[in-house]
Length: 392
Image 1 (cartoon, rainbow, N blue to C red):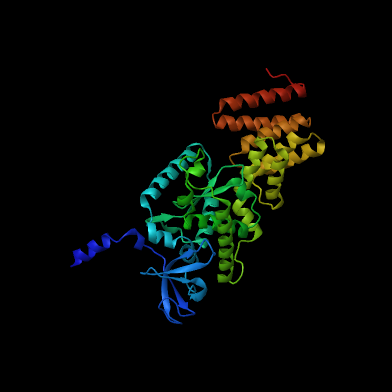
Image 2: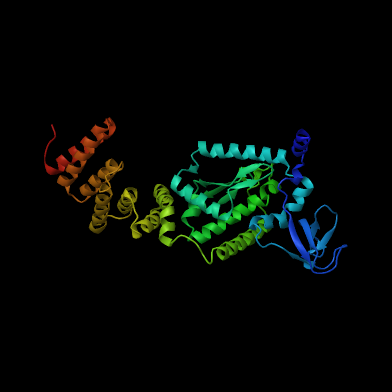
């Protein structure tokens, strides 16, 4: 008997696994049911002609107009309700289309592996963990797509403010997007929109094998109507979340800045290397003004000043920033001293510069870095020439 039951469980069709059912109470007599009868529904259908919505009765071909039903959604998971309205009927009809999903997942994993190889995935465990915690506020990371999958956030190294979601639960959000997000509330809303794409099967529906774009092949680019619908759902979720938590429950502006500090610093350096010095300065000043700048940020401030202007005031500011950077006494010390020595030479302070370049030499010698040792000796000799000393 046990084996028979087990066999029956093994052959349960995919359409019955994790199917969303929602009960409703009838407001009028309809389809053989009476007023106040409780009916179980498995999904919805919209009449394309009159735009009327119908609820589909479980284990039946009957459908009842939504306007005649008080749907019981209290104490139901927010995302279950969204699935009920938008994809539950399709899943009941077509199943989970596992072969199609498995193929799409393999393509997604291959694409993500390529991004890793090309160093297009930004690695910052602290910020990744923060984003994952936000996802956990939006939805349990474990999701069902005919089999267990997980919502996971990765950070895309991109100078464009973009976010993509994939059917296997991976969400890619760019460094530029995170930098330019003004509050945790705004960031959560955007992540909720991405979760909506995952939970409502946007990818499986819009995957385009013939496209030359990886994102289109994986269904991560959607029609405007779908984006609009999921933006609305994200707003609904935010209202649901805030109501559930008795008002807004977000990190303070300062904490939100700390979570993003590493990416802001990284983006500032990107802009510097792209010769966008004003943009780089704007980003690094965010951290400086909040008094959370690190040695890398102070070094960048000095380098920007050196690129943009040559005045005693700017040079003195650069020297001040470099001395602050040096006070961290971390792995950037050789670069900081090298920059400081150059600024001191610019100011004609050759004795001080020579002392700094001597420190550069000592650090390079400690690291057995012959190239940097040669450079430091060259700079020491330059200082000697200005000081009138001849190096033998």
